[in-house]
Length: 431
Image (tube, rainbow, N blue to C red):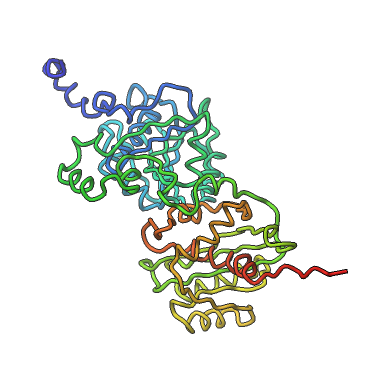
């Protein structure tokens, strides 16, 4: 039937056919017909998410004729960085320019970071590294790419929601490989959100067969494969010390009486180095140990900075919370860690700690505090919680080092675990 249809097309219709996305689209790439505010396309790598997002933008801004107005006139294009928006969403092989027919192709205005269509519609480019950039502009549509990997996902997403205020029904299309982060999970739970899923293989016609064979052979049924190839939101790792149910219960707003800043310094420096884990926590230790409570207040971790810069971040967190002391692991760097901190903040009380057991063994007593409901999380700690979900009894199931979790463990060990080990029940008075 398709062959018969193609044979009857005129030359002009054949030229237009590549740009009729409804004809070529895979089902998960077409927007649902329901009344929705957010459409989330969760798919594996190469599943066609970018093409779906670009075509949705086209459908929003284009009219029946090149100069006819479309449903939307002001669109926000938001990615992790400006470079990624430009190179993937705008100029990429599946980006907006590549998908647009010549008579409807928008012009790129580099100075304004803006696409302008022949009918006057505009799409402005924004980086998730700068949430405040979305304060002020207003839109009737937005395309958000890889929301689950943004470092400032919650702040940027919130600012975008305030900006989506034009037209009768402002909408946002989110194209992302799923990751276990709070902002995505909350979005998926909203009644106004619709979701489509696709495995990488759904787009096999446009992917190298050797690629599919290799990644399936190498990653099989691992958590990484379910996330990166199947497009499945994986919540708990087998054997995790912190399940999502435990983390969801760990919400609180009270403030403790004693504060510490814990730091897990990186082994190297520069962009390739692990992050410097910096976590602020506090506790109230009154009465017997079972009544002691702790609060995780801030994840101030930094990455890709010099030793002086991470020491300044530690000192800033110490001052911000008026903490009682800094706890620093000194396995990596030894005396250098103290020297760097003293150069930046010579008067800060410092306790140096040495790791004598593996990460999982050190983390287990802290995880037990969470199981007992004795630790609360205050504020947005998405990246820290993502690492916590990957810490298992066998070690860290993620990539790199669990730097933020290490800092968390040192903080709560200092506040609760170590004092508990030295606690003695008061002697009873004999009358």
